[in-house]
Amino acid sequence: MAGNGPITQDWEPIVIRKKAPTAAAKKDEKAVNAARRSGAEIETIKKCNPAGTNKAASSSTSLNTRKLDDETENLTHERVSSELKKNIMQARLGKKLTQAQLGQTSIMPQLINEKPQVIQEYESGKAIPNQQIITKLERVLGVKLRCKK
Image (tube, rainbow, N blue to C red; front, side, top):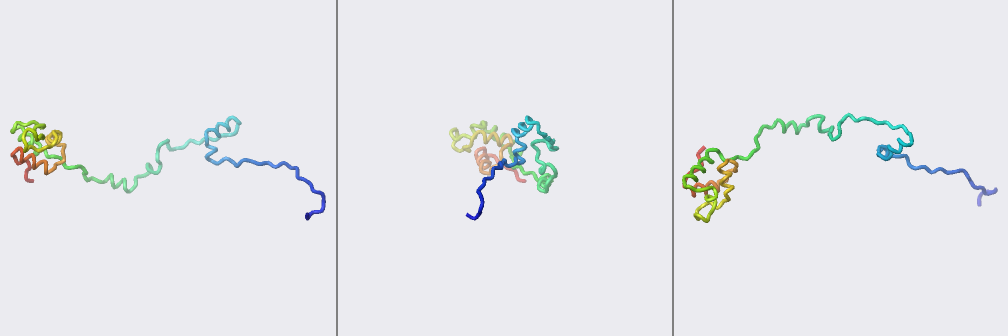
């Protein structure tokens, strides 16, 4: 032993403290309620942005958004023309066929073998033109349906 003298003990109290709460823990509802019960001061700050808004997105229009807004190109599919749908309907009625009969193959083997819904879409103008179906319709109905542009 290096020291000469009596050995003494240090009897001073040692205080071990918990780590100070983080900012997230201070905002926790339990921590705020505990602080209210103990009488501590609580500061509340009202935020200026309403909940659910994205400040970055709503603050200014970005370049891409502006380009999309300025875009005037029509990006829809081509539909059956009114002239074609009238021609199909007149030719079908001239042959005295219903839409279902025109689509079936059991009545006449040379019919187009399509669902009645397809014929209905062509006659209402909702279908996207398919040249194979139009060719089948022309062959079965015996009429030229397409017009030269």
